[in-house]
Length: 445
DNA sequence: CCGTGTCTCTC
DNA sequence: CAAGAGAGACACGGG
Image (cartoon, rainbow, N blue to C red; front, side):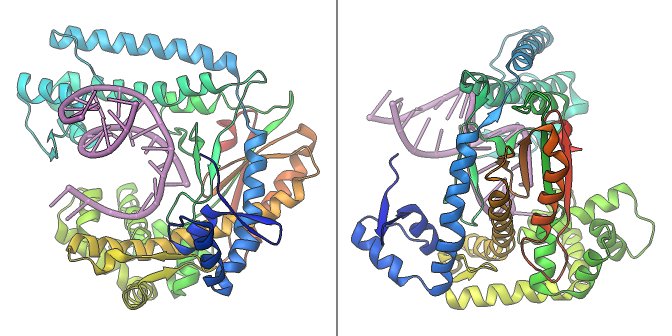
């Protein structure tokens, strides 16, 4: 699609950016002009100091592309194709017929009609066969395990192996497209391919990461990611004392939350995992319903976890209440640097819609402010690498990825860590972990 | 061909 | 049912 522009003193402003900042669809140049002059000072400052400069950074990243080891990927393609073929035959032998394993409907017929397994959950168009359900059915029939494995392999094969192979140019690179204006929260998105969702767990997923390499013969891929950036933003905005002091002293927040929730010092892996999910839940705008699903416990127990959380972190509770109150009166929320999200859902007749609006209000402030911090960091880092052989190749929400010659390794890791950690000043420190290696897989620690 | 639903991957 | 933000493959049904 052609990008539309609004011209102001020789500067071409993409209309998408005006739409993004004003949360409004713009259909004519006249409307763009009105919208621009109706932006408040904070939003104009965002446009000129953040979004327009970011456009240049993203355009540079798109031109630079990402180097792929084509030979490695071709080997992987063959291995996966024969693996898929093997599983398909095994399943056919087991159940006596060939079915399309990509079809949820055919899977459902096999499991619930033919094999008579219990229906644990229904969707809009029939019984569910999603991963959660299948895991519960695992002990009841040996074919379940194979279906799950088929899905794991075929997902990666069709989403990554084929698209990446067909996207490679003569120099062995792929060129994802980044968008600044696609999300409600200010995050950046990537398409064709979506390199923000490259698998990380599982053996086949790791093999995909292993095909992304440096463009320099002896070069490195370097990855720098913020540690707990959303919790740090939450601590900063809410000013909650326990959360802030935990992050100040670099404690493991999930363990600390677990210690407080369960009221003891020694925390098991399971207990820490529960606390971790509660911490995430807060960032997502928690509900007892949602948390109970995540944890596999009843709603009352989930509610008890939430209550316990708010007793330990009362500042967070106040932040959430204040946010929803303000959102209801103004109809919108804003991030630390002033990006707005309008929330008409808050005034819906539908209860779920209203609750959704409340969760989105909380989440947008946290996720959106974190997105702004990374943008500031990208701008600073970009200005320092623009005359060098170091390339910024990806942004994955809390992570920046670089491709660099061997001799720039020390300079880059030191510079990136400093610029990211000092990008903005919060009430709690920002922490960045840096890893590097010959491939993107190695660069993830 | 296109929209909708399901599923699965990321942060 | 339904925890936030996304991309995208695939099946399927309507046109």
